[in-house]
Image (cartoon, rainbow, N blue to C red; front, side):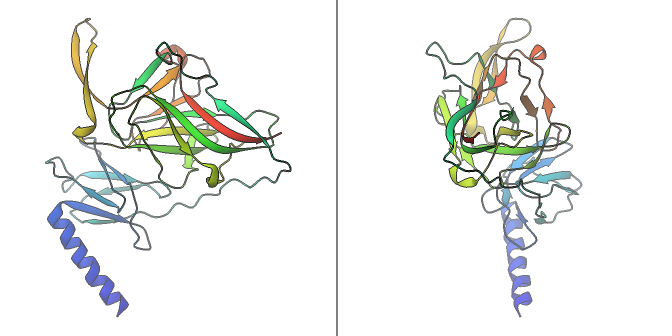
Amino acid sequence: MKRFFLFISLFIYKSSLSQTGCMQVIDENNAPVPYVTAMVKIRNSVFTGDSLGRICSVSDSFIKNGDTIFMSAIGHENLKEVYTGKKVFVLKRKYILLPEVVIVKGEGIFETWGTKRNAGSAGGFRCRQVFHQATYSLARIIYPDADVKKAEILSIAFYDETGKGIDVPVRLRIFLIGEDSLPTNDYLQENIFLSTKGKGWIEAKLEEKGLMILKEGIAIGVELFANSDEYFYTEKIKNGNGKKQENKLYGFSLARESDDGFLTLTKFNSWRSWVVERFNHHNCGNLVCQVKVKVWR
C-alpha cells in the first residue's frame, strides 16, 4: 500500500512539474537535493536549483530533448545524462573519508591566517575580480604552519569590492586537497550562502562545524550562484582599442591582493578542472581571504 501511494504521489508530482516547466532532483531516499547546478553542454547554459531541489525556467533556452546535461550538488556524485523529457533526476550521495579528529590539550590560541592586513582607507586592496557567469568559482589554498598540531576554523571572510548594494547569491565552498595539490571532494557538506549587500568584509561563522585546516592544506572558495538579470549591473570599461564600452556584469566582485604565493585557483563551472593561477600571467594577486582559527601548537 505504501508503494502504491508513493507511485501516485510521484505521478502527481511529475505532472505538476511538466505544467510549470520545472525538473526535480532527489537522492536515493526520495529526499530533495537542494541548490543543484545544471549545465547544458551544447549551449553552455547554466541553471540553478532552489532549496527544494527544483530547477525551473521560463526562458526559451531551457533544456530540450537530446541535450546533454550535467548536474552537481554538494555532497553528491555528479550526473551526466542525455535529456529525454523526464522531470525527476536522482543524484547519489557521495561518501568521503573525512579527516581524523586530532585530540589536543589546553585552550588553544586565536590567530588569523591568509590575508593578514585590513583593507586600506585609500580604496582597499590592489584590484578586484569581477564575476561574469553563474557557478564561476575562485578559491585560495590555505596551508598550516609547520609547528601546528591542530587548527580549527572559526570563520572565513572575503572582501567584497562591488559596493553596488545588490544581494547576489554567493555560495561558500571548502575543498579537500588531492594528490595533485588541487581541490577534490567537498569538505564542507552543506550549503552556506554569504550576504553581498555592501562593500566590505563578508564573513561565514563556522565555529560549530568542526572543520580543521589539514596538514595538506584546504581550498577555500566562493561560487557565484545566480543566473537572473536582476543580479546584473553594467559598467563602462575600455576595450583593447582604448574605447569605452558597456559590459554586463554580475553585481559582485572580490578583492585581490598583490603577492606571489600562487595560491589562487579558478574554475569556470562545475565541470571544468581547477586552474592554478600564476602571478606573472595575471594582473592581480591572490584572492583576499581571512581565516580565523583556534590553534594548538
